Each structure stands twice: as structure tokens, then as C-alpha cells.
Image (tube, each protein chain N blue to C red):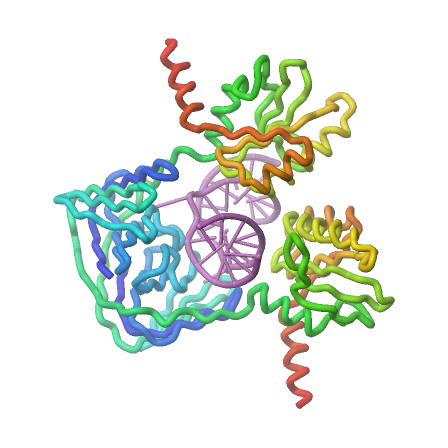
Amino acid sequence: MRLVVARCSVDYVGRLTAHLPLATRLLMIKADGSVLVHSDGGSYKPLNWMSPPCRLVEEPGRWVVENKAGEQLLITLDEVLSDQQHDLGVDPGLTKDGVEAHLQVLLAEHVATLGEGWSLVRREYPTPIGPVDLMCRDGRGGSVAVEIKRRGEIDGVEQLTRYLELLNRDPLLAPVTGVFAAQQIKPQARTLAEDRGIRCVVLDYDELRGRESDAFRLF
Amino acid sequence: MRLVVARCSVDYVGRLTAHLPLATRLLMIKADGSVLVHSDGGSYKPLNWMSPPCRLVEEPGRWVVENKAGEQLLITLDEVLSDQQHDLGVDPGLTKDGVEAHLQVLLAEHVATLGEGWSLVRREYPTPIGPVDLMCRDGRGGSVAVEIKRRGEIDGVEQLTRYLELLNRDPLLAPVTGVFAAQQIKPQARTLAEDRGIRCVVLDYDELRGRESDAFRLF
DNA sequence: TTGTTGATTTCGCAA
DNA sequence: TTGCGAAGTCAACAA
């Protein structure tokens, strides 16, 4: 990785046109040729960048970074304040926990959270327009499609609605009711869901994880 | 901005739990206290980070970055290979062109692109569930709601459908037809739209911009 | 290769 | 401040 601190102006021409006037910035050139232009603030997103695969051509006082699609990042260097190279090697990468997939696994193991006598038919129940997160049977044996989101927004309700419309065409399955389960449900999503007869359930991740621990403690 | 190259391991505990095993990485500490952990590859997104506002506490061999919500980024330093500080100053920032807002302005000024005798009623026509991008009248005086996207996907069709359903409840306005206008319309979105009687129009940004230039040339 | 969905999304605008 | 939609979204995963 090469780190250059320089007074520069930057122009991007590609999916849009963007210009950065002259200022001092950090230019990060990664081993794969990608370039990031960072200022001293903002979030993790660079002011401007070129994603790999791309190639950097260095001319005196000017860098041209171009990718296959013809998008260009032009960096005009006014003054280079620092230029250093480091060999970082390949990164072993990140391990995560706590995302939607985990929520799905947890709720699948504890469908009783949704109601007494509920049982799981299957996780990732296949339909022609995509898998339903959970297919369950409620206490009276009725089919229930459950859509799980970390944050419940209108899109999720629309998605579940499409599943329900399709599933209810199957006479062997119908009637299929719907449950929209999320850690947080936005008011507009809740209104739309309930207007369509879909039940909303707010999930408590820590509580589900707690039940998980309890289950382990039995052994 | 402070740039540290170090062999380190990183743990994030917050909205999720994530771990980075020992490796050589770039640690970028911005003036606002935010920290970015970059490897020599991947995209512009860091492997791990803490967004501002947050504060960094330096202990021997260990950095603790914490924000108000109690999310923590723990960096365990094994060996510091480089540590340098640069004064970048405040960045003047980015100017953009070519986004959806501009498309909306351009099409509003050239609704005739959509059909002969068409006129604009108003841009950002308000409804209880959000503003319709353009409300127009077609050559025969019929109301038309236009949804504009850069890339037309299913979400946009759903959105327009909700608007149309609502607008058609108003007897003074009904019947309201729909136009889904985008620079690019995905096949699935087109199928869904046309199935619902919504007309699809592919916009040519350069052509609209050209008409704009033509208009200026008249003066 | 293409499409779909999630994201510690981030970012910008408007109410 | 909050909420919502767009993003040069990116990235992972399935078809």
C-alpha cells in the first residue's frame, strides 16, 4: 500500500461527473491498483475513488486512474508532501455475528416466541419468487409465512405480501397468514402491514440469544 | 490526520460483533476522532471502523475507540511500523452532477418528451404517502403521475402503484394513469409495470441535457 | 453472468 | 432531530 499526502485537485468522470478543488488530501493506492482520496473528516467513505479492477498511469504532476468501463479518476498533483510505501500482505479477513441470518436461525429455533403451540415447517421455504424466511404452523394448524428483517420497512411488507398472494393460490396451503418480524418496525411499515392483515412482531435479539444460552445450560 | 501502519488485531462490539485476527494494516485516525482500519485490498470500505462522533483512548499497546451509544472498537497493537501526522485542513468538498434530482428537473422542463400536448401540473406533487415526482396532463387532459428513477427497479414500480391507487380514490383527479421513467429499466420492473398498465419510458440523459443546451442557445 | 438482498450501510434533504 | 429515499452505493450469495 502506498500512502501519498498531497495538495491536489481531483476529477471523476464516469457514472457521474464530480470535481474536488485544490486542497491537501490523503491518496491511498492499494496493491490491486484501486485509489482512495480521503480528507480529514467525514465517514469511512472517501471523497472520491476508483474501485478495482483498474489501472493507474502516473504522469508528471498528474495521475490517471481508469477502469474497464472507461470511468476515469484524474488527480492533478500540486505538491507532494509525503510518499511512502508499505507491504501489508494479504488480510485474513473479518468474522461477523449478529446479522439477519443469525436472527433467522434464532427465531427458527424458538418459533414458540410467536405463539403457543407454533411449530416450524421449514426455514427458507422455496417459492418461484424467492424463499420465505420461515414457514410455520400456528397452534390451530394454519400455515403462516414469516418474513424476518433487522429493520422492518415498507419493502419488507411488500415482499411478504407478494409471497402471501402467491402461497394463497395453492389450495393445499391456503389460507396462509403472514407475520412480519423485525428488531424494529417503522410506523409506515406497521400501518401498511396491519392494513393488509399482516401481524407485526418486534424481535428482541438479546432475549432470543438469551433463550439460546438457556437451552445450552440444560446440558 | 494520523496514519499508523501496525501489526494489530481488532475487535468491534456494537451493532454486531466482529473480529480481525493479527495482521499488518493501516490505521487512519481523522481529526474528528474517527478511526478507519484498512487492508491492502477490497473496496473503499474499511475492514473495520468507528464513525464520528467518538473518542479514542490510547493505552500502551491498545487503543479503545468508543462512541456515545457504547459501541467499541478495540485495537490491540502488536508492532507499530510507522506513525505519522499530517495537517490536511478542512476540505472544500465535492460537486456532483447527473443524479436523479437533475433528471427530474430536466424532464419537468421537457414533459413534451413523454407525448405531444403534454403539460406539467407540478413537480413533487404532494400526497399523504409522499410526493409524486411529476404530475402531468396528457394531450387529452388526463392526469398522469410520473415516477422518475435513474435505474428503474421493482421498488419504483411498487412506489408508483401506491401513488396511483391513492390518487385514483380522489374523484376530482381520477382516472390517473402512470408513467415509469428511468435511464434504464430492468426487465422484471418493466414486466410488473406493464402488467399493471403503467407505461415505461427510457430517458436519455444526454438528449435531455442537449435539449437544455438548445433552449439556452435560443437566447 | 445476472439478479437479489443486506449493510456497523453512508449521505442528503425535508418536515 | 428524525425520517425517508438515493447511492459512482458495495458485497455476498443464489440461480
